[in-house]
Length: 495
Ligand SMILES: C[S@@+](CC[C@H](N)C(=O)[O-])C[C@H]1O[C@@H](n2cnc3c(N)ncnc32)[C@H](O)[C@@H]1O
Image 1 (tube, protein in one colour):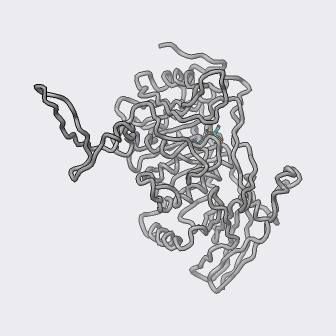
Image 2: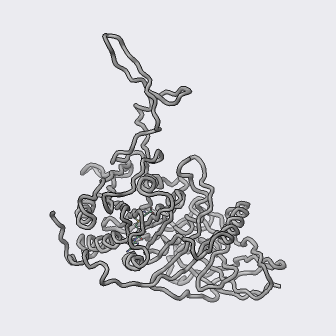
Image 3: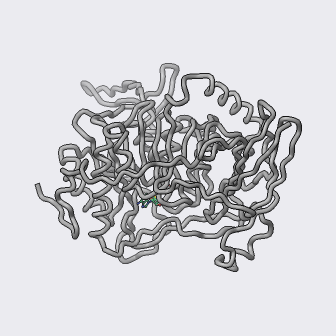
């Protein structure tokens, strides 16, 4: 079989995968186990019930907790090998495409329409295409180890590199395990070129680990009928049908043919999924965000309920929220703290997103517990005097008001951005409280956050009721619009 060679290719790497590993420990940064969410108002009663049920049921240590991991995914993949080798059922990745540019994300400011643009991630490769291929190759061979025997991997790319990576995938996963090159075609309305044809599709390479793999004929992955077919379809009390025409002995025949599905089984060209638009509820103002409907088809086809779905370049967390809504367990990772912060809010706010099966309805469910882990960082860096709070005590109940926040390194911030800030709270994107700090990590008990659609931020928390009198430590965390995270601890006496 022909092979691809690039500068720095380590040909022995594929067979030596389990030998030269750097295993870094994971550190828990944050646990989100049914926190109260200011924006959800009366729905918090449901969260409280769910939290109590959770504590009463099975031993908590035996329960699976979904994971969002911050760090370079090469280290993360290496470290996951310890516990997850052959355990992950489905991997979807949407890595940088070697476009040579930087990608941006919009950060909205306060409650107004003002925003600032920040770099989301870089896609420039100083070592050229060779360094890009090496980057992906090193990670894909680790992903293969993590994939279950009947698992699948989908690698989302475009014309820049999909042809190289297909050869790399053949080498790693085996040519015989190639299933599809899915063409996701979208209208490229903004393309200005008249020098060549407008590029308007991405390629998704679908490989399985073996010939025995999960693939579901699920009615919810079907593509809509074409307009011509839809026009010909009719309904009666027995269902949906079309007329099959023909003739016999010169006589015209017409037979009703009933159909059982509301669409056709998907081909490998997907034209029915538009790119994210700013007016949709899933919009996260991140230029390379992928549509939930795209990932829904992949997850429903290639995994079952409770399976583990992973996305190691998770960006805004599209794969994670889709996995969550479809009842799968999930692991996500990203190198950028801004991406992790976006995922965290998007998962907590899943309540307000579309139901994937009945698109015109809200999902309305609370997310399952998830942890935020990091690699290479074992100490939480507590700050002093970066923000000011007021404690409002009423017997055994406590609520916190955020009174002020000072942005770090203010002298380095662009004057144009500073001129858009009217109030300290305009810097704040979310803030959270751990009312009973006990571990070495932050357990979110209550959180308030802004989303691209809901800009309101509550500056007074929901009251928290302590079971008993005593001295407690509370921790307050502020995440600002520039991606800084600041935690301060306080002592409190509950009488
Ligand atoms: C194309 S975006 C993913 C978008 C995502 N599919 C979504 O729907 O939002 C690629 C992501 O990969 C992340 N990334 C790039 N290099 C990485 C690395 N070495 N480890 C982890 N994440 C990385 C970037 O920060 C970026 O968020």
